[in-house]
Image (cartoon, rainbow, N blue to C red; front, side, top):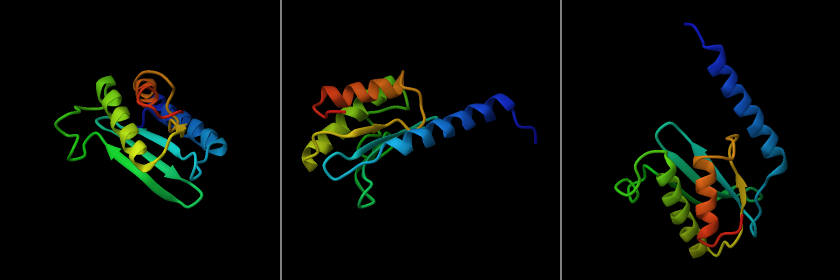
Amino acid sequence: MKVCKRTNNKRLMKDIRHRRIRKKIYGTGQKPRLSIFKGGKILFAQVIDDISSKTLVGIATNSKDLKDQVKGANMDGAKKLGKIIAEKCKEKGIKEAVLDRGGNKYHGVIKSFADSVRENGIKI
C-alpha cells in the first residue's frame, strides 16, 4: 500500500504542533483545559482538569442531544458546540479555561468555536 507523502507529512506536523502545545498547556481545577478535537465529520470538546485527571464536561456534535441541531464539523456546528459547552461550564461553575486546539491551526472551525465560547461567557 502506497502512502501519500504530503498527507503523512501533514499528520506529522499536526502531531508535532500538538506535542509542543501540550508541553505548555495544562488544566487545573480553577482553570481547566478546554480541548477541541476536529475529525472529518464530528467535533468533540472536553473540559479537563489535568491535576486530578478528570473530564469535567464533554460533548460531541454526534451526541444524542445535539444530533438534530448540529450537522457535521463545519463553522455552524462549531458555533453551536461552543455555545453548548459554555452553558455546561457555567452550570459546573467554570468561568475561565485554557484552550487546547489539539495541534490544529487557529483559524476556521477552531477559531469560530473559540469565539463562540468567549461570546457565551467563558474567558479563554
